[in-house]
Image (cartoon, rainbow, N blue to C red):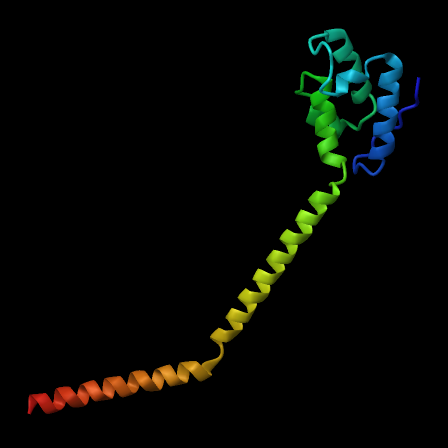
Length: 144
C-alpha cells in the first residue's frame, strides 16, 4: 500500500498528500469513495475504510473539521476546498476584483482630498454672503 504522509496543518504538502491518498484508496479498490462517481454511496464498510484512511493522516485540528460528515467524499471535498490552490480563472477574477477595489479606493481618496480644496468653498461662501446682503437690503428698503 502507498505510504501516505501526514497532511500538514497549513496544507503545504496538499498535492503530495492528495496523490498518495488517491493511490492508496485505488490500491484498496475504494478510490470511488472520494469521487462523486461512487457506485454505491451507502456501502458503509467502504465509506468507513476511506474515512479512516483520511482521518489517520491528518492533524487533530483538521479532523475536528470533518468529524461530523458521514461520507468520505464530503470529508475529502472539505479538505480540498481548504487547501487546493485556486484555478487560473479564479485567480484572474480575484486580480480583477482587487484592481477594481484599488481604483475605487483611489477615487475615494481623490474625492476626500477635494473636500479640503477651499478655493470652491470660498466662492460659494462669498456668493452666499452676497445673496444674504441683497436680501437684507431688500427687506430694509421694503420696510421704510
